Amino acid sequence: MSPSTRIPGRVTSIESEQGMNVSVKATGKAGFPHRMVPLFSPAGPTEWDFAHAGKAVAAAAATLAKMRNFKGAEGESMLLPHGDSQWLFTGLGEAGVLTRPRFAAAIARGFKELRGAGAGRISLLLPSGLPWPEEEAARLASEALHMTGYAFMDYRTRGNSPGSCTVEVVGKGQLPVLRKGVKDGGAVGGGVALTRDLINHPAGVAHTDFMLAEARKLGRLTGASYRAIRGDRLLKEGYGAIHAVGRAAEHPPALAVLEYGKGGRRRPTVALVGKGVVFDTGGLDLKSSSGMAMMKKDMGGAAIVMGALRAIAGLGLPVHLVTVLGLAENAVGPRAYHPGDILRSKQGLTIEITNTDAEGRVVLADAYALALTYKPRYMIDFATLTGACRIALGKELMGLFCNDNALRDALVAAGEASGDHVWPLPLWEPYRRKLDSSVADLVNAASDGMGGAITAAMFLKEFAGDVAWAHLDCYAWSDGDHPQFPKGGSGAGVRLIVDLITRILRGEADGSS
Figure 1 (cartoon, helix red, strand yellow):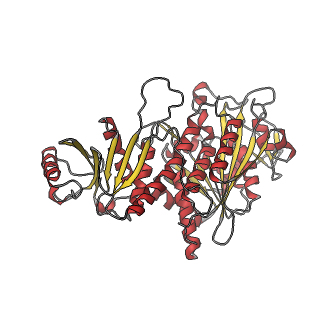
Figure 2: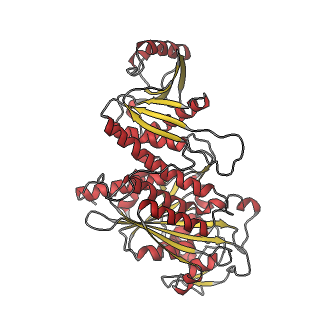
């Protein structure tokens, strides 16, 4: 079975999210008054491909380009009003260095500029000479349009609404192929929008029970089975670590599983695990008010894996996907766990709590245990885990820790292709001694404050077993300094997993996995 084979009965289209304000369709001829033309940087204006534009527009564009010294470089744009239409030419740079992320960024910049100029209906003319088939180009464009057009409006009562917009993607090839690319891009865009929506809700709304309800909805939409272990039942079933972290909150902690597809020949089992700390006060090791300000996003890992499931179901990828959510609020109250407490995890390892603000790894320890019962070939977690990783890599790179070279290389390649970039960091074995405890199997946080992202990953490695495992320490938030990533939950990670699983399935199909 090839990676493109659809699973009968699975989701083949994604319902629009409230935040998805863009409708994208495929067509063979431009019909809207606002038109966007991505262009490579040429040796001279006469070499540009204006096949879609016609002779009159091409001549006017060449004249304007000369006057404005427009070269079609990456990041450049040129707006040309012409008759009853306006044309935006957006630069792709040199053809030989064009990547998928650069192409998507050019589409995003152009779309934002046209929207700012009042465009509600836009024709996007795919250029000749792209290094990918037209179906893939249409998918990349569709993803970028959905991501750029996202707006979270749930709590606004006046003004600033971007309104809806329709974009037609104009190609030169067969229309059914173009439509498939646009549709697949919408599936991925829907997954990103779901992730963003979940992160953008305030913690007073997106508590653990809200997340469970959203997981149930996602299960119904995708055909995935749903199960949850909630509250004191966690303790009864041996999940003492996550129970301790979340027991002080009004809404009890929970582990939830969404299982999509079935395992089998050429259908590998992939487990995605998401840290879902819906709000992190720091516990009794209380954060400062500034440290707490962004902690509604501390469930970003759970949001990412839910968005990835939605995208994969929309694409109909033939994979057995097990999505595990570790949900808890690290609250302060009479039942809050204490520094010095010793917790027993589901796998039996005991954990001495040296810092109640290092709770995410404690939650993941039990989430891993549940994921491993499904015997995955690969287990990948996303977690807003450490400030140390953000300091080391900034906000745009996810720190990657991995115990398997092939999986690490596949994730790096998937990041470069998708634009959700990762950077490998070491599982430095000598730092394991920092986790030694005199009273338990290990402490949850090293005491010297050095190498915090590495020691956190070393803690998680103790619970990962023998499976090919990767831990992604992510920020999950955008400050709005890129058109494709409006301010709020970033959605980074969804495209990474889609690309990774596509690569895994391709390897299964050709026998190289």
